[in-house]
Each structure stands twice: as C-alpha cells, then as structure tokens.
Image 1 (cartoon, rainbow, N blue to C red):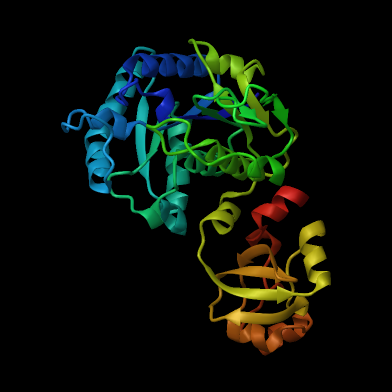
Image 2: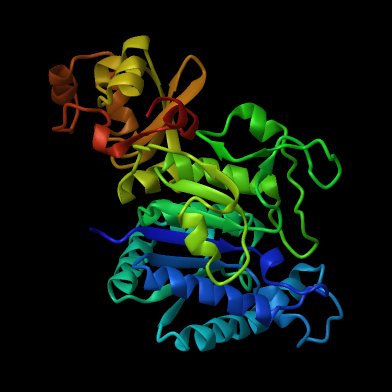
Length: 375
C-alpha cells in the first residue's frame, strides 16, 4: 500500500510564547508528533512559520517589529535559528530535514515551478522531511502568498498530498466567533465550503504574532479542496496529536470527503500561477462541453478574441461575462481572430497551427469556482 502524503502547516500562534518569541517546548512537541507520523509510515512535508518570531529578540527588538525592514531583518536572523531547532529535534529521531524558502514568483515561473516539484519529489523519495517557509527576507507585497496558509495549500496540490493539516490556536471552524459569542457552534465536518461560510468568517488573525486569520485558512482550504486535497483545521496537543487527527479524532474541523480532483503539475501551474495574456469569449455549446464534459475548446466555439498573444500563452475563457476556465493556446491571437467560429479543418488551413483544438483539454483547467462546483 502506498504511503499517504501529509502536509502539516504550523502557524506562528502554535510556535510562539506569550512575548512572541519562538517557544522551543512547542516546537519539540510538533517534531515529536511529526516523528510519530513518520513512524506510522506517512510521508510528511512541514510548512512552518516562525522565522520572525525566532529572530527579533536577537536583533534587540522588545516585540515583533512592525516595519517591513524590521520583519525582513528578523526573518533573516530567525530562519536559520528556526531550521536549526527543527534539525536538532528531528535528529533525535534519526530523521533528516531539508529547507526550502519560496516566493510567489518561483511558482509563476513554469520552469522553477517544475524544479520545486522535482526537488520535493526527490526529498520524499529519500525519506527526508522538507521544511518550507516563505522567503520573508526578500519577499515584497506582489511576490508574497499573503501567509503560509495559501502556500501550504499550493504545495499540497503540487505534491498530490492526501491531506493538509493546518494547526492553529482555534479548535476548528465555528458559525460565530467563539471568543465573543458563547452560542457559537463548531462545524465538525464539512463536505465543502459554501459562500455563506466564507462570508461569515472574518479575516483577522486570531494571534497578534501571526499573519493569517481563519478566513485565510478557509480560502486556503478551498484551494486545497479544488486540487483534491482534504483538509483539517484545528488544534492539537501531545505527541500523538497528528496521529489522532489522521484517525479522525482531531479537535477541529474536517473539510472535504470523496474528492476526485487531482490536477497534474502542468494544470496546477496554469490554474494558479500563470500570467493571463488574453481572453477567448465562447458560445453556449463550447461552455457546456468544457464545464460538463471535459472537452477541449475548438475554434468553432470561439465568438471573440481579446488580447495579443502567441502560441503557448495562457488565456481566460469567458462565457456570458463569467471566467469559466483558462488554458494554454495552440493558436496565436492573430490566427484565432481569422479562424474563430470555423471548423477545425478550416482553422488549421487558415493558420500555422497543425492542431484541431484551440486549447486541448490537457492544457485547460476550470476556474476555481467552476472546478469547485462541477469537477
């Protein structure tokens, strides 16, 4: 039986003490719990916050810095301390660790994205625990994931994980804020995340030392679900906390069951990381073929072309003002303008393409909303 692949995301609130510094006792408990998972024959990837918390005291800050420069300097000092602490603890269990620091632009570059996949695959093959964090020392707003919640979801999809565990300081998802409303009720299990649930959840972080609130975790969970990864959001204590979570005994909310989506690496890059170069407006027949039947987009179904792009570019596919999908084109915009609405045979004669599909289904993905509803 193949090993189950688990991504464990540990937020700052689960790693810091009351002053915002790195809590080594908490870190030791996390490593022991992960070692127990490894001993139970799971593959584990760790997404860990905590670099800023680990470093700001050594820089002379009394509390977590509030400036960008202060945070980046603290991360530069703290990242080494954080990984060294993990390495020392995992070595007690004869486990080898590796560090990967990522920024959003690594994911948007198709070649670098493939290299991340290859590196993680090799590390897991060698029974190593990858420890991943956003590279806070150099990240700027437009190159950040926002927080490690979304990073954990995207990594989970990339490696085709079976399960994403997001450990936080709140024991699951509630219909109201349990800290201010005693009538709040916890969701034990959710098949999916409805718009109503997303709207009723506030974005603010529950911890003054963290960047991601419950809304952030739900958006990340929705992304993970669309990639075929089940999710747990909640707390845990003790050396067997992760084992209990995997045995459906965790103190939190389990999200997603019987998922069938599992985008290949290429489709994930198109869906979540590629830059869009244009738009194809399609008719009803083409939209239904894409949404309900998993078909390719043919030139005959295209009504209008917007943008200037070459073969291999990624474009949005729009029906009635809604983006239903995106994909990599086999035709340039110039050729599609000439061949839109035409049968494939005529389209190929009128262009330099030898492909009957404007976008082949292997290079076409539904928008996250449509994937969530239909696939």
